[in-house]
Length: 262
Image 1 (cartoon, rainbow, N blue to C red):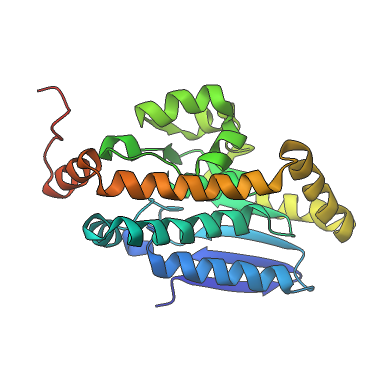
Image 2 (tube, rainbow, N blue to C red):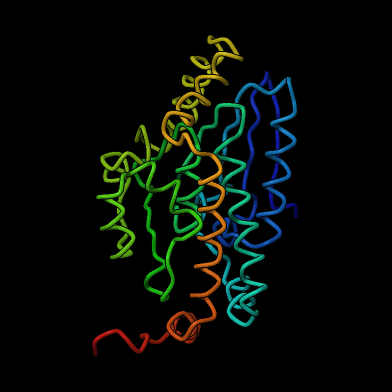
């Protein structure tokens, strides 16, 4: 089963994370496939908008357990390479030359929150739930941090990065992570209405409007790329460090980590 499905109709591409049995959790294969699909859509002149979806009950539950186990046992160099691939995915989605819409239902955790933050527009079902849960494992949401901080601001990130607490769709809207919250059976109709508005606008104007916002918000593109490298280095170091190893081991062993009060 291919980890990412792509369907294009009437100038709109629906990209679907296709690992529903494990809530569309990330692994290196999904990251690579999604990056390549996004690149292809960016080059396809017939595509005017992209909707990012998750098959089944969830948008994306974050990192796949098998992938996490492999990375916990890998060297810092291998972890750095792996983290840079995830950084490349987030950068590709964030900078895509077409408008992007995240369709969020169920769980959006860790890297799933990063995908939402990288999309231009995000619509969530009222039952969706979100978390930046990395610190529970002795890690940090390093690679996705520039995009999440852009979406929710530094003040809110200082709470949710640190506490790793789960929050609901209404809170996600209040934070600025999503633009609209609707009943799950209204997700597609709401997104279709947004797409109709996008298609009424000039394609080049939409492209330039997106670039304009990014240029104003981040005038130094080189510094942003350097930040991606620093963040990849950071998560690689934490994954192989003492605390990260303890956090991951505790998670897989289904026991409290050593730092948790008894």
